[in-house]
Image 1 (cartoon, rainbow, N blue to C red):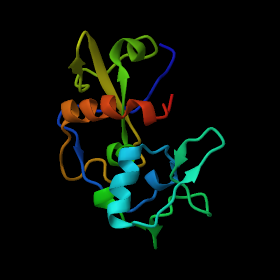
Image 2 (cartoon, helix red, strand yellow; image 1 turned 45 degrees about the vertical axis):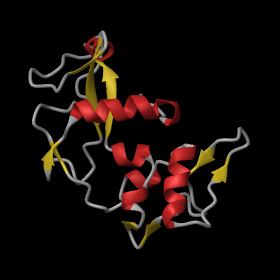
Image 3 (cartoon, rainbow, N blue to C red; image 1 turned 90 degrees about the vertical axis):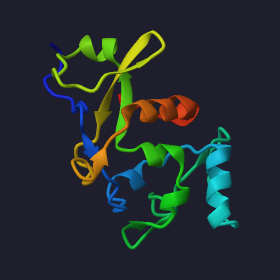
Image 4 (cartoon, helix red, strand yellow; image 1 turned 120 degrees about the vertical axis):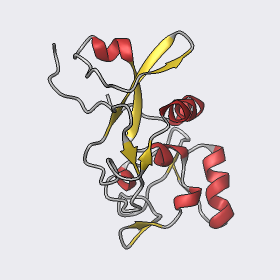
Amino acid sequence: MLVEKIPVARRGMLFKCMLCGQLCCSLNPEISEEDLERIKRAYPSFKPYVSPEGKMILIGDNGYCPFLKNGVCIIHEYKPIICQLYPFYPVEKRILNSIMELPEDAEVVKHGSEEYVFLFDEECPGVGSGDPVDFKNLLRRFIEAKPYLKSPL
């Protein structure tokens, strides 16, 4: 195998957002019009950074999310979809199988003719706490948000 260890989500995996902003708030994600509308419900005067390519990016003057205050996300219930989905990212199972052996208890979710497994950021402090992750719902939300997601691979 080409890769020894990539963190792959397991069946029954737990997650709860700790609202810490330690990792997710440095992603500088591209946001959608829907994300912007949701944020503006809470912060009507918010204006995202617009890149030279015309993409709306969630980044503040310090390089981090402008909604990270005193180490806490202040827009948790309004945050962009990419932020809501962190620390998980789906990958087609066949692609991951080509570079590593998957654990027997890897969470596998079908969508159409494809099967997906989820990678995750094992540094996120919410991993292993809270409720079981609904990976089917997570995959559906990723597919809806796909135009705005950057792949970690």
